[in-house]
Image 1 (cartoon, one colour):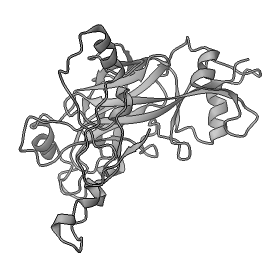
Image 2 (cartoon, one colour; image 1 turned 30 degrees about the vertical axis):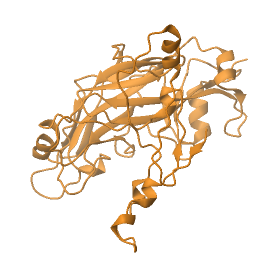
Image 3 (cartoon, rainbow, N blue to C red; image 1 turned 120 degrees about the vertical axis):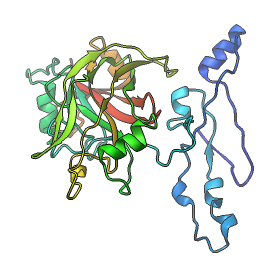
Length: 336
């Protein structure tokens, strides 16, 4: 991996992906679509107060070093630019993994230090017959970052979409005006996961709900295993699973202060939400843990040893095309 010199010249660095090279070798290569991304760009560098005037406002943005082209699809563009059919959109939605576990007790969050969500196989035991999930929660001192593989009655990842703004009240009227009426509400999400490690996705059913009651925000989630495939992902070893997106009904009262942000990471009008857990592939071998992760490792400095593999889950809204990456650590008690 290297950076290209972007000291002012326009750069085009084009390479064929692995799939493209295969098709070139077969003689059926044809460019039918392309994607644009701006992963390297920090728009916070735009300086409208630059002392040299307006010609210099975006100079640092334009001269940001650009990564050379990659041949793997999942390494090239993580945050692609999106085309919308309408040109009258005042706001564009964002996607957010909830961290409101203090008030939404079943919501799993990333571990504060290790920045991953642990996906534990509690069917594998160590030599003392201690379940992985119990060991893990004890070693972490935190159960909020632990998902138990295949469990529908425990923790889950909770994801919301909506407008991250304080200019608009999170009311049903604004939700309809700025999201639903604009086609910016996701009734489906694509979950992209590595099929070598994740057997299936458990998604929230349409009967799930997120509402505001007199006692506060109420999140009700029912999970079921989903195997409905979306279009091919293009990511090597990944599969796409469609799960339901449920319209977020967490609205403030018509009078008084808007306190819904206590329960939601979206500050403005909210779109849809989804919730998920995963089933670990039971065919992961000890050789797989050695090849893609680590085996029998004292991960937390305790006497407990673990096998683990790190992977990334991608969650994409069908209508909005916004994407969230969730780092997952598949983990089990070390097997002899």
